[in-house]
Amino acid sequence: MSDRWCKWLLLAVAAWIALTLVLTAVVALTLH
Amino acid sequence: MRKLFLLLAVVAALGVTGAASASAGGGGRGDMTCGPGCNPGGGWSGCKTIEVSHSSSLWYVYSVRHAFRVSYCKSGGVITSIWGQTNYCDVSGIASCSPTVWFQTGGGGGATWATFEAHALWTIAPAHIYNSTDVLTLTIPTIDG
Image (cartoon, rainbow over the protein chains, first blue to last red):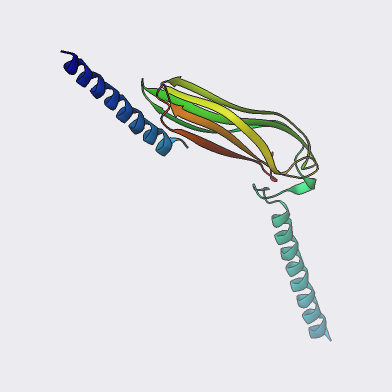
């Protein structure tokens, strides 16, 4: 059970970091 | 003798016509509308506020706008005063932006032009994984009005 939660938490953090990086790239490319 | 007078009369008439044509041509050029590059009478006088900005947005996710504003007065095309320099950001959503520094990079009071540079630090909140700087350049143009 604990491993399962840990896995989901890790996935959520990874997804948030990926989303942040994608949005950062979008801003960098479109800020003009 | 009569023919000579006639010839002189014809030549004189042609000369007058030519002079009239030349005069009309000159008058036409003088009446031309003054275009954007034209600066008659020593330049523009007055005051105005100008602004430059960079912006980016994604609906319902973020919106960021970095702007720099300056006010100035000119007399006869020469800058007499510059004031109200404002470097600011408008943000919404998960974007974050902080105006940092601005400085004058050329020209100014006594000149016909001036240039400025304004910086801001932006990031995607709240992770703040990566910060980036946005740089704006603003020019008070010589040809104004």
